[in-house]
Amino acid sequence: KMAASVLLLQVLLFAIAGAVDAPACSEGDGSGGGTCQMKAQGGNEDNDAAAAAADSITNHSAVGLKLPKYHHGFQQPVDIPCLDPETEVPDTFRKILSMRDRWVARRPGSEGTIRSLPEYKKLLEQLDLHYYTLGAIHNYMSHGECQAMHNKIGETMQQNFQPIYEKVRAVLEEVLGEPVMVRDNMHLAFRIFTSEVLKSELARKIAGEMHSTPHFDLVYNSLPWPNSAKMNHSISFTLPIHLPPAGHGLKIYHAYHDAYNGVWKDYRLNEIPPISIQDAFRLDSHTHYYTPGTLTLHSGMELHCIPPFKAPPLSSGIVAYRITLQGWGVWLENEDAPGGTWNIFS
Image 1: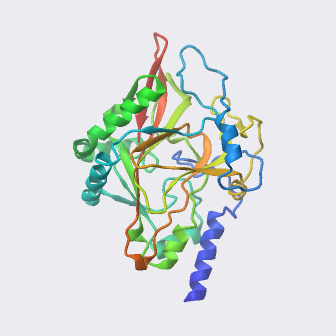
Image 2: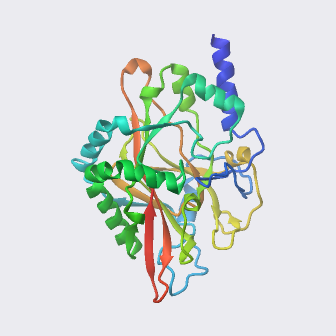
């Protein structure tokens, strides 16, 4: 039994480390793959010097009168107070737990970021590793499927979370300095990880070592857009509602995709060649830690992933959660006047 468990763990870590020579892929584009171009460097978790250097670098190219003030470039994630941590955060957490019958189970990789290795899929099934989503979210389903789910549960989501949605919209509008609207008046969705599904110490060990695949947020490819949409001006945002005792956040690798001209760069704005997933895991990186109630905004074009979910030991009896509201946005330019509007969605 122990030998089999160790073998299963080795198989999973082999898959997660990208031993198959596959490119880092783009979350939610439905392809399960993409191109990652980054010069391999020595891995260094929490590289403060590189992060500080990146924080001072922005890309000033191709910003015209009609384009938004916020644009792609090496901008570190921005943290914006959004919900009251003493009242709104716990209230939202309780509401999400009360809607458990609406949660939809998802296998790791079902959002299109992890290669479908037979050994990997088999192990996930054996250990029953999964997490959940609450609401319609485009990196798991088509736009039509999202609309159908919104028609089914949108009213309930709005009744429970409309004040939260409005706060998210308002704080984004304030920091972006431009109008923000929720696309098609659809609800925003949540992603839920819980230690309840980790029913063995082996499962907890694997979850505690498993990163999602490094990717870039191209979820907007799942939606139809008018010609006025500027895909080189997109945003990603996360609003943490509840985090595990060990904390959690966003792992950012030091590589960037310039959606304006399609090239990839390092943190010094040098163009860089392609690498595989296994090389991506060895890149310099740092972790941006979340705070419940504080919205984190970034471009989505820095190579990034979800870090491991470290659950407490089974013997502790503690149930850990990582619950976040997830969303993205695209800039729609006005056709007859300068300016435009950010359209946000899940």
